[in-house]
Length: 316
Length: 319
Ligand SMILES: Nc1ncnc2c1ncn2[C@@H]1O[C@H](COP(=O)(O)OP(=O)(O)OP(=O)(O)O)[C@@H](O)[C@H]1O
Ligand SMILES: [Mg+2]
Image: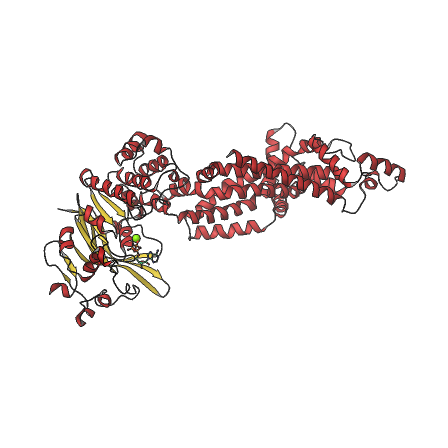
C-alpha cells in the first residue's frame, strides 16, 4: 500500500512539473507582451525594459523556467502586476469560497444523485425509472451557467427569495448560506443527473451479480440489498469519477461565480485574464492543478482502502 | 411421512426470441423431514432452474407456466412477494454452486451473515451465534473468520460459510445446487463429509442437485433423474443404482468414472445431444439417443409406477 501511495504521489508530482513547464511556455505563445500590457499604452520603452528585467523576461527561457520553479518551491507564485500583492495571498483569500461552493454543490448532487440512482434501480423499468432517466439526461445537457442565469432570474429577480449577487454579509452565517444556495444549486444540478445515471448503471450491473441472488435467497429486503449490499460495490467506480468531477465542478464554478458576481477563484482568474495579469493567471492555474491532482490521488488511495481486493493486490 | 416441500406438475420456461425454452416440464417431486433428495442429470437438463423455482427466485426471463411449489402445504408461487421473502432463508435456504461469487466482495463474512439473519430476526444476529455456527460446519477460528472478506477464504471454506449461513435460521428445507462442483477433489470430499454429518444433525429436508453420482450414492436417500426438463426416473437410491429402469439412467450410471472398467481405457459417453427444448418432442425426449427405442416411443409417454416410491417415464420400462 505504501509503495502504491508513493508511486501514485510521484506520478502526480511529475504531472505537475509537466503542467508548469507547458504553462510557462504557453504564456509566451500568446500574443501581447506582458510588460507593455502591464504599463499601459503610454509607457516608454525604457520603462518597459526595466519592468521586463524585474520580471525576469530578459533572461533565456530555460533560466526563466528555472527561476519560476525555484520560486514555486518556496511558495512564491509571483506578484500581481497591478496591485503588487503576492499572487498566493490573493488565491488563498478567495479559494475557500470556491472550495465551499464546489463541496456544497457536489455534496448535495451526490446525496440526491445516489438516492435517485438507487430509486431507479429499486423501481427499474417502471414509470419512476423512465421519468428519472428523462430528467437526468435533461439536466446533464444544460450547462451550469445557463441554469445559473435562469435560476437567478426566477428565484432572485422574479420571486425575490434569494440574493442575486455576492457571497453574503461578512460574519453573517445565515446571509452567506442564503447567498450560497443558488450558485450551489446551479453548479450541482447537472451532477445530480449524471451521478444518478452513473449509480444506476453501476448498480444494475452489480444487481446481476451472484452475491445479490444470495442476498435475495436469504430473504433480504430489496431496499436493504440495494442500499446495504449493492451500493457499497457500485460506489467504488463512482468515487474516481467523483474526484475527476470535482475538478470539473471547480472549472464550472468559474462561470457560475461570474453569473452571481461571487468572489472566488473564478472571478479572480476571469479578471486576471482580461487584464493579461499573467502571474495571477499562472499562479491560479498552477494552484488549481495541484489541488485537482491532490484530490484525484486521494480518491485513488481511498478506493484502494475501500475495496479490500484492490487493497490486497497492492499489499502483495 | 409428510412432505415439507412438494413440487407439483411444475413447468418453467425461459422467454426467448421466437418462442420459449421449456427448461422444466411437468415435474412432480416431494421431500420429507430428515430425508435427502438428490436431483441428477446432465448439464442443461433443468436442475438449476428447478432448484431456483423451489424458492421462486428464477432468473429474469423465466416464467412458471403451471404447477405449484408447496412449502409445508402453502404454495409459495402464489404468495405475495413480501410473504415469499419472509420464507426465504427462514423456512427454505439455498446453497449455490460457486462459492467464489456467492458472497459480496466488499463486505465482511460477519456482516453478510448478520444481514441474512437480520432480515428475519435481528435478535439472532449476534457474533457469538454466527461464530458458533461457523464452528459447527468446521471452520477453525470462527471469530476471526467473521471479520474476514470472502476473497481471504479458500473455496472450500467459503462453501462451508455458505452452508453455515443456510443453517443459521434452522430452515425446514436446505437446497444445495451443485455444492461441490466448483471445488477441487479434496475440498469436495470435505464438503461431502460435512453433508453426511448434517444427515444426522439437521432435522429438516435436504435437496442436493448434482451430476456427481458419488454425491448421490454417499448422501441421498432418494434420487430423481432429470432429462430434458423432465424427471424420467425417481426412487430410492439403492433401488435405482442396482436396478435402473429408464434407459437414460442406465446410460448415466454406465458413464460413471467410478464404475467403468479401467482396462477399457476410455469413458463411455451417451451419443447424441439434448433435444431442442423450445420444441420438445411429443413422445419420449430420449428416444433419438435411446438404444432400445421403438416406434411406439414417439407417442406421449405414460408414467409407470413399478413399485411404491418408484416412477419411470418410459414406454419400455413397463415391459
Ligand atoms: N437465464 C436463462 N435464460 C435462458 N435460458 C436459460 C437460462 N438459464 C438456463 N437456461 C436454459 O435452460 C436449460 C436448463 O438450464 P439449467 O441451468 O437449469 O440446467 P442445469 O441442469 O442446471 O445445467 P448445469 O448442470 O449446466 O448447471 C438450459 O437449456 C439452459 O440453456
Ligand atoms: Mg446448474
